[in-house]
Length: 439
Image 1 (cartoon, rainbow, N blue to C red):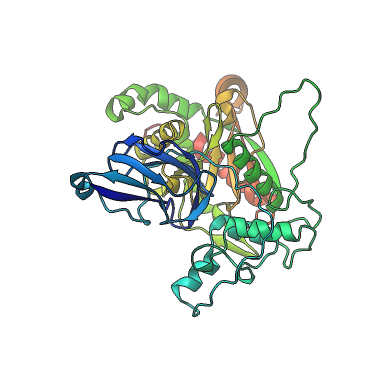
Image 2 (cartoon, rainbow, N blue to C red):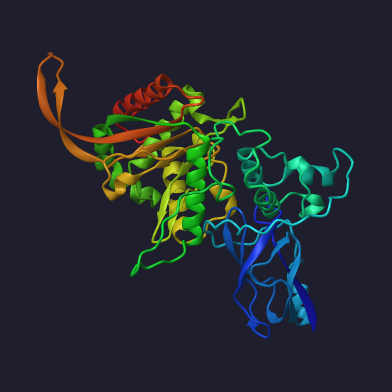
């Protein structure tokens, strides 16, 4: 017989810890290799972690609700020597296949005096880990004007974790930020991460239930996004008749050759990327008083997950994909988002986002700009409308056209209305004059 360690895996390059949210097996249960054995939560995703080998769950070392560093042994399996030899050695750097959903933030903990992190030479691995922290922790620290380097962390090599930062904020909830985050209000009341999102009192007969993890995470992210950016929305009506004709003409052949359903979205994504190259401010992000002009074109595509909420998988390097490639990638990401088979990295690094409330019949909306980007495009319902068309002879006629309202929400800190409207005008012109071929 042999014993196999089950470790806390690393679910992303910047993730240094995870929380055991639920054990799917009990001590003494028989498990098969790759069978889900426990669930974890990180600041990016929830995941079911598969067993590294077949055997019997001998002991559980980390209980539900406990947060530990990546690489920590959380359980041990007892298996025969042959199975142990066949099983790959566990490693903290290799992410396990994951069932993905957006988690709720860890519950705030009472303030406690954390031991001072041991000093490390400047530029050492330990120092870089301690000051780098995770993107979520850095974002929270920036919002509250907290210098991460001034805190003592409990993570790897003294790395400041989300729980460390929440404890620090809870210890001084009324203290003024040492360095206000750009765009953040100095008068925001305390609550989630120091921000109150508003509350209501239940009345007699009301039904009260806690938010799901995905809903709570969405709530927190949207509230943060509204605080850190200056939102403005512009609306344009776009005539998609030419694209409708292309779909009607080429749809059957395209779907036969590619095996993919041809929708309006790949045409729109292709045109968006073309215009982002012409209007780089729309593909940028704010870093304090600096503007980061992204050199990649990564399109986040919002996907409704029934009945739990919303995920935004990302089409990486969309500018390098053909119309067929965009169609295949979008369809694949959407399908795996709905079946919880996305990997964490597929939800990261969007530079521009597209959301499509029109599939539910909405004519227009004012979407919220995701944190870390500067603009989001909303697509309204595509429908036939009577329009006045001026012919070559100058005479006006009424024609039936396939149209939709597009809305662009943008961060007014760096994007002026004129810039946003130029982008939208060029996008409209591009879609209305698209060549009546698939490429």
